[in-house]
Image 1 (cartoon, rainbow, N blue to C red):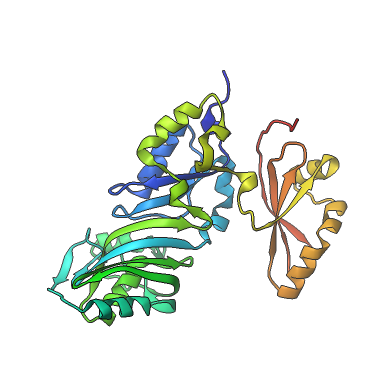
Image 2: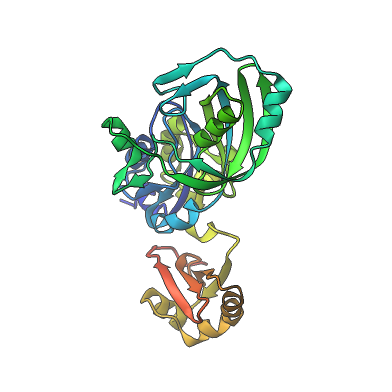
Length: 324
């Protein structure tokens, strides 16, 4: 009996999350469908939200910090005049008033909300305070003072604006909350606002158009079971193709054996002299992917350090066929 497809997946799986399920539910379903426990995600979506979830499979769980830091893009529909405890329409209503604002005023206000802004993190979020998640404190009816965080928004485009609602596209850097962004717009318009619909269309370089609907994943995986991961098509990105913007080097023979054992050969160090100089000049670590010339698989992630030298950040244990 061969290795199941779930055990062969080491990389990213792109899934289109439906409304009404949690991110944890999505992970659990993928574990069951693919027959593997090694599944993680790169950013939660609220039950109300739909759209792209980038799942980490197998050894791909080791790169979560790099994927989590990438920008994300959303399409949001907001209701003006409505304030809830969760900052979306799934929450308890705190205040609701009729609003009939001019379309141009709404459009102009929304489009002005770009760049870096100091905004409160939603109380119903996974941000921790004194070791406990904010939403856990809120559910215990304990008073919660939401921390203020610098959030950066860009590429704001209003798709629709009328009376008491607007629909817009917006991108944000890591740490940005669309619910906080909508709340701030409602405050500026002096009527309050809550998220009514939210869809993530982009995460890093990946788009929801590449993803498979969660309800169809089981069939797709079943059809690819015999043919292997390549049969999954664009919904699966193997580790050797992830983070293409990074420097990539190939190693073989002795250099590969040393790398697998957590050592960097002198030859490889000499090959990366340019990256070490860049790190020293910029005073920023430069990430490097190391691939096997024999199998094409990702062996490790290195960083050229600002203070000099190279540091191994991750080692990947992937069994792959030799190239022919």
